[in-house]
Length: 184
Image 1 (cartoon, rainbow, N blue to C red):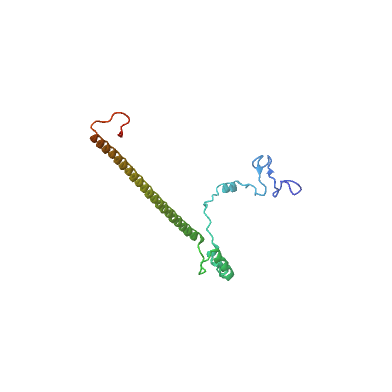
Image 2: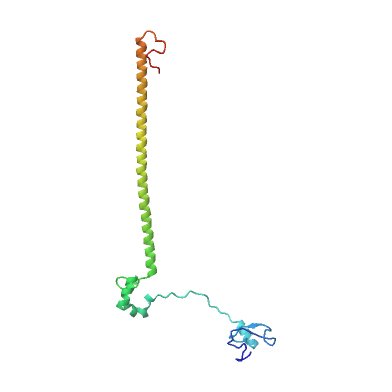
């Protein structure tokens, strides 16, 4: 490797090209990393290195429940601020915001279900009222129709009786258009 005069050194931002004399021939080597082990034993040792750790989530941290910050939360000014923000209850105890949020979500769902039930009940009541009005109108129309039918029957009956009365008073029926009889 070249030194500080102007080449690719260990701290150079550009990768250094290892020539034919290098371990792997014309390969790129990242700067700033340690060189490959020279002894066969060290190479084998590196290749046999196995990490058995697994990816695990980090434990959650909540500053409100940290015992070392309890003194901070006892400060009256901080306490008032935290209570107004909803992180502390009336007694000054820390509130689990996620549990509180879940509880509020359940309450919101119950309220929306109750509102939906009230709307449904109001719509059903309006529908029953419309149905009763429709049935009343139908009954009214049916009664009017029955009155008209009975009126027409009465008129026809009166005409038949009038025709019979004229037929019985006259010995012979009158001929021609000048007769005063009603035709039915």
